[in-house]
Image (cartoon, rainbow, N blue to C red):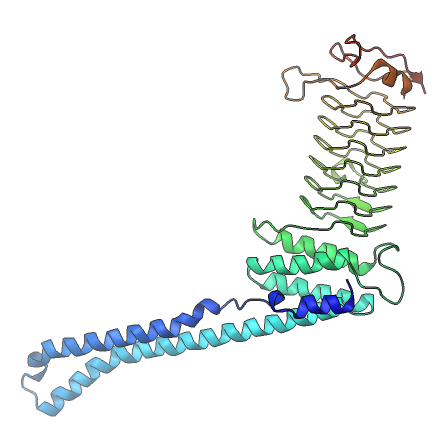
Amino acid sequence: MTRTAAKGRGAGRDDRLESPGSWLSMVPRKAAWWAGAALACAVTACAFLWGWLSAGESNSATIRNLGIFAVVPVSFWLALWRNSIAQSQAATARGSLLNERYQRGAEMLAGKTQLEHIGGVHALRQIAQESPETLRRQVVRLLAAFVQHPPRDESHDPQTAPAGNDVKSAVEAIHSCRSHASGLLIELDLRGANLQQIELYGISPENADLTGAKLHGARLEDVNLSGAELANADLRDAQLAGEEPYMSCFLIETNLSGANLARADLADNDLRDSDLSNASLFDAVLVGADLRGADLTAADLTGADLALAELSGANLAEAKLTNTDLSGARLFADDPESQDAAPVRGLTQAQLDAARADRESPPRLGDTVKDAASGLPLTWNGTQS
């Protein structure tokens, strides 16, 4: 995003925050209507009660009593009217202040230094927390546009260099805005974003569109990417495994088709039903990973470590398993009644023979894993490591 474009985004009419008190503009009219109605009722009541009020009283005293009877309800409604006007004015002022802060935050995002960018991110994050839920979507979109196209600063090219602290702050702010949305679905478009070597912990950009994103060398710990689009993303050397299994990433039903995951650490990751077709997993670490139901069609698993991985129901058709470590990997379901009872699919004896495993811990084939070409039961004849 260029400086001019960012300012245009921030200063444009469409990006201005709507006044959260705009609905109050009708309140004074309503109060005036009710005040008039109250006065009419009072006058009508006075007409009916004239005889009772004038009994034993002079005309002047009767008129005084009628005046008091009529003025009290009208004064009450006028007080309500003035209060509603004050509330409307306060809401309008608050909306104007939010809009000014939003404009200033957008201008800071278009600044020349990372310090300005980080200041703009924090300003917008605060606005999103103070605004109605429907306005958070606007802040998220602006921050996502910044992550996709951060302006060049004086120190590096944001499209080729590792992601800076400003981009990291923006991603964390997006997570904060989405997590405080109380069920409001805020779409997240980060296609092609440069997130190289970024370090993120405990965020949840699930269902985000990260198609073609650059995550080379990124460290993502306890990050929920379930349902995200990561097709053709660059995840070479990415660290997606935590120090403990429960701190690994969640990648359930994630689209990783064609993604580059060479040497990525995916140990203990939950990749159930994910699309890894045509993905490059060269020398990737998938120890203990849950790949049940995953599509690994034509994936390159050369040299990958799938020891103790769960592969029941996975599709390995045309996958490259040269020197792939399958020590203790389970290719069928122990429980035939479970929903994951289907054995691995698409696997041939030739593919299996190209893999390797420890002598004491060969892959677990069971009786249900068949050769996709001949239909005969597969046997372990692979290289021992």
